[in-house]
Image (tube, rainbow, N blue to C red):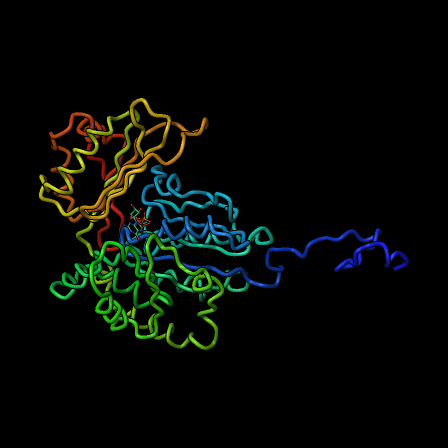
Length: 391
Ligand SMILES: Nc1nc2c(ncn2[C@@H]2O[C@H](COP(=O)(O)OP(=O)(O)OP(=O)(O)O)[C@@H](O)[C@H]2O)c(=O)[nH]1
């Protein structure tokens, strides 16, 4: 260059004819997009992990696929924070009503196909399953589906475990083989995030040992609110030639397990939708009756929702995992959203849900119960979803 003495040197010499353009961020047409499957039992912290990844500074553009509980309910999406200050969420695809491992395989493949058509706009896909998903059929789709094979690649399966409730699940599982999903999810995991360690006193060694008894090869990472080193999440390439034989064995094993042993058939899901604003204190006392006083004598594993609270412009989120619950203002309602209450309750028996309809502890919630015409009760039974109207 002629002006070398006056100008600071350029790292890259720019030619006026060919303006500098940054290299494309997305994978090339030929290279498949990595998919991370996030699984874990009800309330373990899967959405917390998705939110953490979306707001972390890693420079990746992430697409998220969510497996929703109810077609209309939209609770899961309302709770995910679409990448504040970090990753972009390019696409949201909420799968139709049902559990990803049983009834919605087809919509999952469609969702993935839609996404990969725009793969130059994303670097990675996160797939968050429901807490009751058995990973085996999902893995078969992602790993072995011919149509998708060249467009996506299964990068890893991350299983989030609630350290507090896992102890309880192990004991129950030993007694009656309940919570089979929780154990299948560990068996298929490449990484287990042992989350909520803030709620557990004492050593976690025995929990780690129990996890390794189910899956000797898995990497265990302890966390609070899923704040983990993202190097343990992205680009694991866990299904390269090195590990594929182990996965094949697991798939074979899983095929041999009868469907009734894959799902805990006593579990039911109830969705409540109510338009009118509700009183926060009444919702809290309703929750305390259900979760703490166990007034209806039902075992509630999980409750979550979005609430439209009297005299508030904030969307309130309701979260409960067994007896621990929180109701918090999350963000302002947007102008385009219709303000409404949507609550999902997952518990141990349909009879109890019927009993819940007659719960008389709280006038507002009781009214929501009697408005079941606008909600549905969805039960998982023998791998089939039964949709019932209790109005
Ligand atoms: N104390 C504590 N609470 C946590 C931690 N991680 C998540 N939570 C809370 O646990 C509740 C459930 O977390 P989610 O991320 O919604 O769990 P999930 O696995 O997506 O739940 P489902 O999709 O319903 O199965 C929320 O109230 C979280 O704020 C943690 O490390 N410690």
